[in-house]
Length: 414
Ligand code: UDP
Image 1 (cartoon, rainbow, N blue to C red):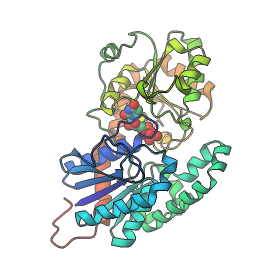
Image 2 (cartoon, rainbow, N blue to C red):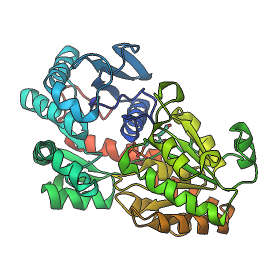
Image 3 (cartoon, protein in one colour):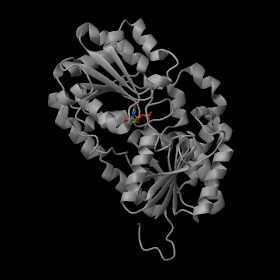
């Protein structure tokens, strides 16, 4: 089976953690790699956002990324993708024609849905869509002023998200909450909806010796360590975390907060808003800003930490929470989006309300005080049983099998 993934802004081979690079990049890369491992031929088309990278690059045997120019080659803020959308869509349609067509097209995020819809109209190929984030939910979660300013953007986004739900042969929801949102907010027909929670690579993300991981990362052997991993976007709640961490330090004065993600030190123009906030709270020596790290290196950080904080205001799924559990480290997360399901067990951590530093601090102290060793097995079990990569990829393959039109001469899924 030949599968095309359309991943507008998220290049599967880019390093996550920077401003525009996160869960979607990891999701698409891992899915492409595993689908290829199971016999599919996979192309991932994405906007060419880095001139140092080639137009085509292998992801794994049987899977490659194809970068199409749309606007000048170079970074582009996600909200400006609309300016180059027509060119991107033309590139996607051109690729489909160049390779002689795909059996299934799987689009990710709403800009990719526009390209998928054009491809579907022109070539009648079966479409599968994963939203990764919904405009209406995001709009409700971000500040009112920001939402009002972007009114036109959200209206256009809503129209496309509705249309792809009506036009696609299948829509993949990542959590029961997202599935309900798709029904309620977009009217996506139930018979097109498939609940397939993402999986994480539990061979890579597996518990390592904590003392060794700390030594390798030059972290103190005995201090309580709180970890944050992710992009430093406002909706990730990092400001709440810094405020909460100041409160944690009142009870646990030796505690350290490690932040993975954000701009790499060499790309920072100055100390940046996070460092400035840390300084304002008088936390400079106790907050360790590591910048983005390659995905494969995150397991060492999760293993070194006593608890991972996921303080998001809005979180469609939240891979970081599952990755942390896979490494045996409990999670304190806000009760939003997919986190309401992934962290819904007191043995693996705690859920707190969003935008509430006091509640976040209390939960962090409680988890730190109760010790993470006793929670380790429950965390690993939850990640491997609920969010293993094999189950995820089998679920996606089953969706493809249902929607793909049988080709003359085709003998099976692979
Ligand atoms: N990540 C990474 N290196 C970093 C920061 C983040 O590999 O320096 C990865 C992290 O391991 C996770 C993804 O980026 O796989 C973030 O996904 P999540 O769903 O938590 O958030 P999103 O980026 O989708 O908002």
